[in-house]
Image (cartoon, rainbow, N blue to C red; front, side, top):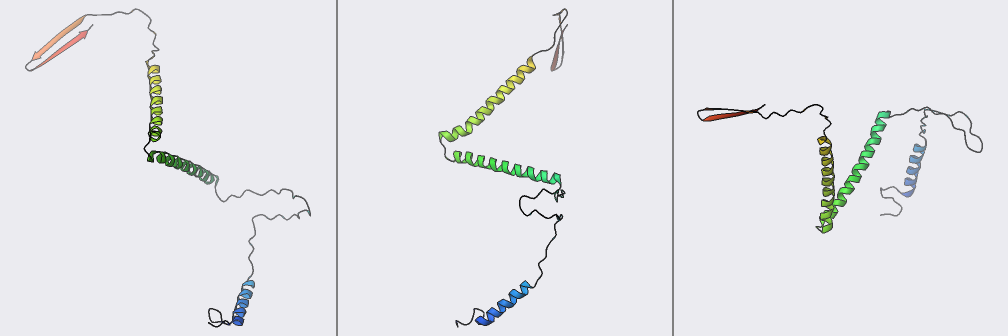
Length: 161
């Protein structure tokens, strides 16, 4: 290839002229400025800090949607934490050692112990009678026994009176 020609067949002076034409055409386009929703017309001081200017709250997203977005970020972060926890536990279970067996059984045994303690406390709380009996107690021990037998079946009925 000739050193005076560029890759596309233009010589250096033609390539420079084409580049100048493209740059001039691009520079001739007006730059669009988009106005903001609030313009402060006061002149800033020549030095120092500027005083605060009230700006109206014009949200694009409703408050309920922003709340849902924040909640979903929290749920996502929590699920990443649970995923890391599961990964660590599964890494421990990958090698069958005493440590990995204890890693599985100790939390389950702890949960079983807590469940048993709660069940025992609930059972004991239910068994406490709050009924106070006042008055005489009468115990009847008369038993009436009637027996009916017809064919192959028999029926016995005991009545306590």
